[in-house]
Length: 166
Image 1 (cartoon, rainbow, N blue to C red):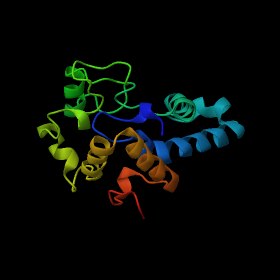
Image 2 (image 1 turned 45 degrees about the vertical axis):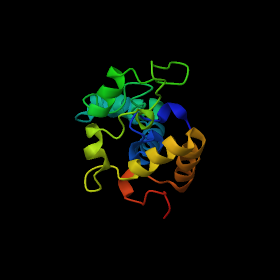
Image 3 (image 1 turned 60 degrees about the vertical axis):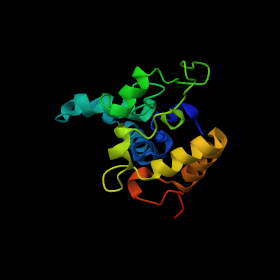
Image 4 (image 1 turned 90 degrees about the horizontal axis):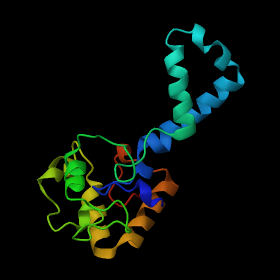
């Protein structure tokens, strides 16, 4: 598990459909188009001048990094804003006054900012399970779960159960 892909809220970007499905598909498409010579003719295709740098960036750099480690995710996310306002640490070497690293460790968790995140119809119902695991058993157990999900090709968008099992 790559800890820098852990979000404040408890989601793991390594289980995001963008990382699991879109980025590899973008790399494959870019490689195929480049080997077919599209780089030389893309400017003749309507929208090609904007598309090519976008596709190249997705293929080489990916789309985003987590909200904890970079500028990925929704900048207007209430959970993210709260975490940054409380100076929740981006990694263990940078601890705030409470030593909180992720929201699951915050004394106010779960707060009202999580209501839409935990709603099964619109959010990520696995968060309740995952954050309880993180809070009760720590990083090692939480990381093992994320690794197991990654091995199975799990994505949050596929609606699998909280354990990540098929």
